[in-house]
Image (cartoon, rainbow, N blue to C red; front, side):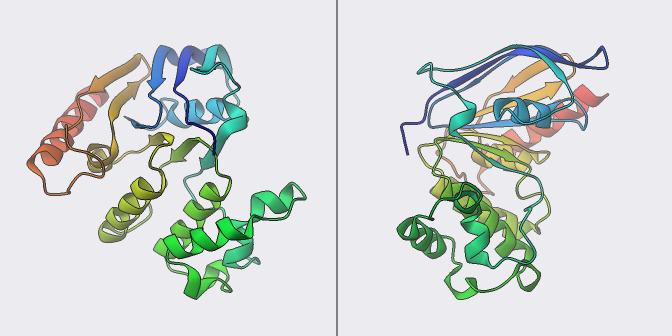
Length: 242
């Protein structure tokens, strides 16, 4: 993996001539986690997909730049809301999917390391239907990391999990994505309070920053700073939706 750059996003998006979101400026600090919250339909996923140069259905007027001036989308790994695992493929083949689609041989050493670190060795020959929700999410995370990209985009990656599995997956993601530039879209104030080095609430009018706790990520669920930040975020979200 090359060094993770910082990324700046400046611009606005429209759909059918109507504003999806107003001009906004979002900075992703190099090697840090940025969390983006907001109500449904304000354009959070559109921001992720624009960064990855994926289809959005929106017209974007603005700029996306890395601090080292190299292309952003070429260095992005994207993890969607659903795990998007191929139901007929084994855990191993799902993790190595990117290489297979490019007609390349998978890096077997890296695959072995990810199977170990994600706790998937005992499930390597299973198919998605044989896995729990948490196991499927670990496969999706391993597949994202298999691409070995410095910029990681996560779209509500743990929203379908129960509370304890979600916390465990947050801890695992924070460990495995250390040193990468991460943007995570989430509806969960607690998740942002645990993971964000920078936290923003998005509305159709722009971004409102929220000061994160000073403690390193992942922060303790029951730490007073985490709970205070979670409360502040929930209050801000309610104000913005009123």
